[in-house]
Amino acid sequence: MRSPALGALRGARGSALKAPFPAQRRSLSLLHTTSQHVTAARSTRRLTASAASVGLSRSQPYSSPAQREVKDETGKPYLEQPQQQDDHGERKWSTPLAKQLAEAIETTGPIPLASYMRMCLTADIGGYYTGALGEGRDPFGRTGDFVTSPEISQVFGELCAIWFVAEWMAQGRKTRGVELIEVGPGRGTLMDDMLRTIHRFPAMAKSIDAVYMVEASPDLRVVQKNLLCGEDAPITESKAGYHSVCKHGGVPIVWTETIRSIPIGPEKTPFIMAHEFFDALPIHAFQLVSVPATQSLPRAPDDNSSPSTKTSHPTLQWREFVVTPTPPGSTHDSLNTPPTQSRLSPPPDFQLTLSPGPTRHSLHLPDLSPRYRALKSAVGAGALLEVCPDLALYAADFAARIGGSAARPKPTPSGAALILDYGPGDGSVPANSLRGIRAHRRVSPFSEPGLTDLSADVDFAALAEAATRASEGVEVHGPVRQADFLEAMGIRERVDMVLRGGRLTPEQETVVRGAWERLVDRGPGGMGKVYKALAILPENEGRRRPVGFGGDLVDG
Image 1 (spheres, helix red, strand yellow):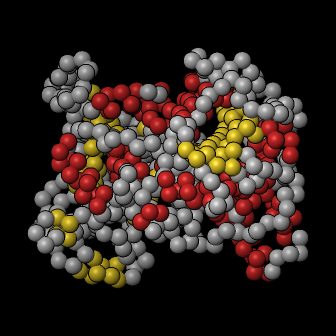
Image 2 (cartoon, rainbow, N blue to C red; image 1 turned 135 degrees about the horizontal axis):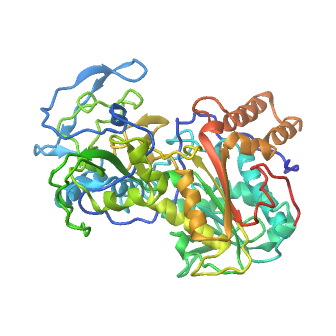
Image 3 (cartoon, helix red, strand yellow; image 1 turned 120 degrees about the horizontal axis):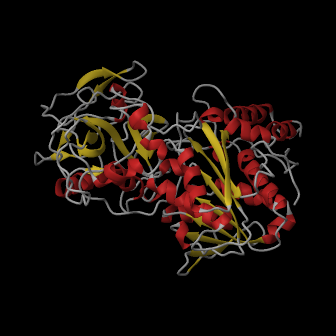
């Protein structure tokens, strides 16, 4: 499909270099920090020493060194400061949230990586997304930590809108019951571009009953409301969430903290957008270890499995990585901070250590998928695995809304979900992918908790498995590279149309062309290659492929 004329392009929104793996965000409902052990799953690739890229190590005594001159990743010298002490001789944590996490670990023991990520991103006080704007920080854009595709060029949002218009047409041009849902809307930039574009298709615009924005951050909800409705637009509260009216056509907009707050009805046609949302969901990480024969196996306090405590022969078992504080006085050198991470940030407050025995997560999560179980024979001891339980929950919710489920039957499936994020597109399981981003630099994910953005690769195969398992009324297409998706949607033609309009200065033309090239860059680490697109559609027995995924525009 080729996109029609959509009006004059404002030009690229940002020209700052994008962090290696940016992240936007995202609405995550805050769950309390879990107790004991923990944590995050990783998979597929065999990893040994490279596991240090996220700070894997075992705690050991370390004497506090004095500051000394070292070099950053560019070779520029600077004075490295060891971890500090306060006036009372107590360890001084890099952020208030770091102190809160350390006190929780002291009380409960090591915590799962998923619990650490959840607290860092969405804690009520000091969370990266939930507390950023209130503290005068904005994660997005040139002055923030990362730049996302909608911030680079509005053409991205326009083409996502065109994709949903094409699905609306292919599914019979519903005249009512259409819902637009976005999870993790960030500033609201993407939805603003989508609504402005959809408004140019009056029949679809009139079919929209409501727009739902799933956002956990109160501050970001205000930013989104101001952009989509206007600063003076009133906002009301109900049990469902917060309500206002969009400036594009007067459609109602509802903000909810979780997607579960959005009603599900068989007569609804939900069009769901998830851009750089899944990469911020908490992960559990595991390593496959060889347990010698007759070794006693420590049991987790909450382990309800069979009471076998010895093995008569060597076995392969999963162990969970848990988060513990780094030794007092640590430096980047003592913690072996990898060269891919900037050393301009303070030394990490925390590190990953391998649980000595099984945990309730290690006993169950690695058995959820045949792909995970296959790692025992395909890779063996040393295999790493990342598992994201929340990913499966959201994918199942999307699928149930579109195709129905046993609990909520839907006689005629309708709607669609478009997911754009980064991760392997070949069916492999992500491993060792946790990353921290601050000020457009890769940093340790365990440095300055609450000030550092955290993300991990999306397991697209797990997402597809969860969706098709949750509903027999859906099918999944992709993932395909973002470059292929955008080019199939007509990004070249759209940009050419803008450049031929004659209303841009030479400098603006350079910005527009540069933004387009970034979005479809297929080079190493390029957005067009790293990012993938995946679609969830009503089951149609293979009769139709969606546009952007090898299909043509169809008018149902």
